[in-house]
Image (cartoon, rainbow over all chains, first blue to last red; front, top):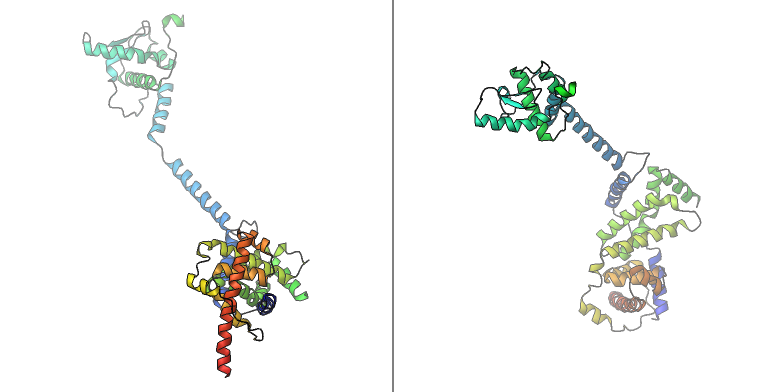
Length: 187
Length: 185
């Protein structure tokens, strides 16, 4: 059999060869077609992109809903600081056990020094006072003017002093630079 | 032709009835093509499903210039070749003994006629690489250069694979003919 003849014979037999297709092929094809349409980007019909958008939107909404109802400790701290800055007489709910007792230090207007009331001559208290001196430099102006407004009189109100101490410590910790005023500046 | 046009327009609009008509009309022909290229019937069925998904998704790109059947055939052949490339690592893995035996030139049997089923049986037994080249050259009418480009093989490789496939097929057909003659006698 020559090559051409053989090839022609095969070609004639195979060109229109049409075997019966199993019925299961149609169902499988329909599934594949549905999936293909679902994964294809189309504005006219629901597809995986819309589904992803809905899921993402839902997650964002859920996350933002949780954020608005809960307050972190850091947020609470900032709020209390602001409140203290505006009205030092109000004791802020700062749960800091390591802070220096409020009654131990005061800020004096004229010398801008910190004195220890309860432990005069006590070296430990002096040390505390000296360390608080630097912290006292950073107390917000409103706070200083409030506490020193009585012409050099030392204010020993526990709440105010505690606020000052806390404020000073937090101010120094956060590195806030706040101007302080003394009596000469006022003049 | 008019019927084809209606089917095409219906498919473009996404009408399920039109899609079903297209499937009923052309699925046997396209399944025949898939069978010739696939390694087995299951694989051919998978390829046929992919072919119809491609047809439905891209029927809007048919420009009505060439034959619609030719366009469908082309999609089936291209999908089959893509499938072949996917399974390339399994290609040309026919038993060496079979290949060596197939080198023998069969004796002439020009007067014998074979049915499509008989030929299909023999083609199905070919290694998938030989089968692909044989189909592309003999049935689809591609040149060796085109086949080389399609399958990323050398032209000479295509020629040698075709020669081996032909020899193997002739030998198989001769065996079938021998059985037929014995049955007649």
